[in-house]
Each structure stands twice: as structure tokens, then as C-alpha cells.
Image (cartoon, rainbow, N blue to C red; front, top):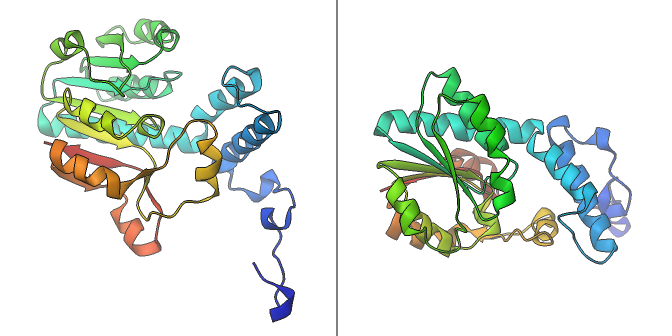
Length: 258
């Protein structure tokens, strides 16, 4: 931003209090603009309500937006390739949400003529009920569901069900959990594909503050690294070149294995 004293002036945009027009945002990220507006509107009313029809509608749109669809396909394809290389016997998906990522994985497996057992978990039973339709659409793939809040360890029953090596993948789940969740995940998974925004630089931005309002917590790589070293000593930061070259503030994909 520029100031008048130095012959500079504010540039057009949110810093000047003007509303950012949708057409000013790249199409792939316009849903993020919409959801940020909804969050602000809800907070202006006094409380964020996940069950509000407007909130449920916009998050449903978000999960199918171009960027999230692309990212979901990337998580699925990388997981499938790792499964092939490591002779993985079981997939796990945590934080099922509206089952969009589950659907992407089932579709990718079908396209690649693969059929690995997939166990999908969430902390809420109503979420898992969404899986019935997918199970009917992909009868050739063994799809099971179960309750697991990853802030606690997996149940003995769940551990017993999983064949090893097991690969666990997820998208935007750890940010709504805690650091101990990584330890709990390590009790059941041999390989993990973490699709989270993990803060690499230690610097927070406006979107971090906005998403705090809906329960998302900034996770810092400096805090995660010692836990990963104990649980999954082999690690690959997928975005490393971008982090080093352009100062990208967050890791979007982290691959770890024993």
C-alpha cells in the first residue's frame, strides 16, 4: 500500500475498504471469496453456525470447486501410485465430510482398474451415511465406514480390521484437529498423504484469521516436524521447490512413511 506523504497512494482493493469484485479473482478461487464473505456475514450476526442453510450450501459448492477437485484428484493419484510402489494392502480416509474425496478416490481406482479395500472414517455418523450411495455405485471396491475422532487413538476394532502396509490419506482434516492426531494416525498407518495447509514460514495471513472463526487452527511445520520425526521418519514436502523459490507460505501436501 502506498501513502500520500511519499507520493504514493492506496491501491484499489480490500485495503481501501472497497469490495473485491468476483471477476477480479481467478475463476478457480472464486468459491473461496464467496465462503469468506459468508463467514464474515455469519460473524456479523454474532455466531458462526455450521448448520445454517447458506453455510451448508457454500461448503458443498467449495468441495466441488475447480481447485478442490484438482487437489482431490492429486491426493488420490499420488496415493494410488504410492500404493503400487509399496504394495499397500489397505487405504484409509479420515474426515470424510461430504464424501467428495471418497468419490474421487473410488473413481480413480476404477479408471486405473485397481480395487484396494478402503476404510473411511469420520467423527460424525451422519457423514458416514453419505457413503451408501457410493458403495452402490462402486460395488467392485470394498468400502467400509467407521467412527473415529482422530484427536483420540483408533479403537482396537479398527486397528484389527486394517491390513498392512496401510496408506492413510486426507484433505484439510488436521487443521480441524490437533498435533496429537498425527501420533494417533501413526498407530494405524504406515504411509500418510497429508493434504493440509501446514504453515512453513511462521507468518500468518488474513485467511488464517478468517478460518480460525470456523474452527480451523494454523498448524506450523516447526511444531509438526519433531512429531513426524518420531512417527514417520521419512518425509517429502511436495511443495519444496515453490517454498524455496517464491516463498510460498504453506505446505499443501506432505508425504510421510516409516
